[in-house]
Figure 1 (cartoon, rainbow, N blue to C red):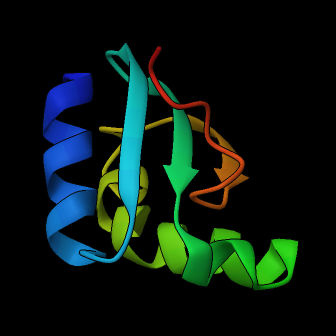
Figure 2 (spheres, helix red, strand yellow):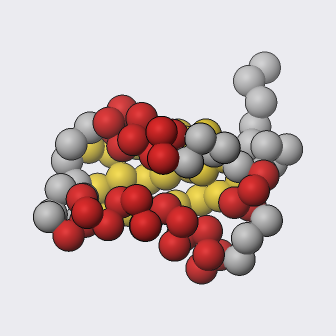
Length: 79
């Protein structure tokens, strides 16, 4: 599995968020940029992401996911 595949899938499922995804194989790091998700509790935010990734986790396509959440204002803007 490739990072672009995970990114495209999540952006399709959660269109109000933007994702920066790194990794390959079965380990991924997600930067999630969303004002809506940033306003939720840490557990609720992760639940929103895992709800979509769980089928891939269950079949072993994804083994490990780390997530960091940012509001639009917290995410660094390109210079």
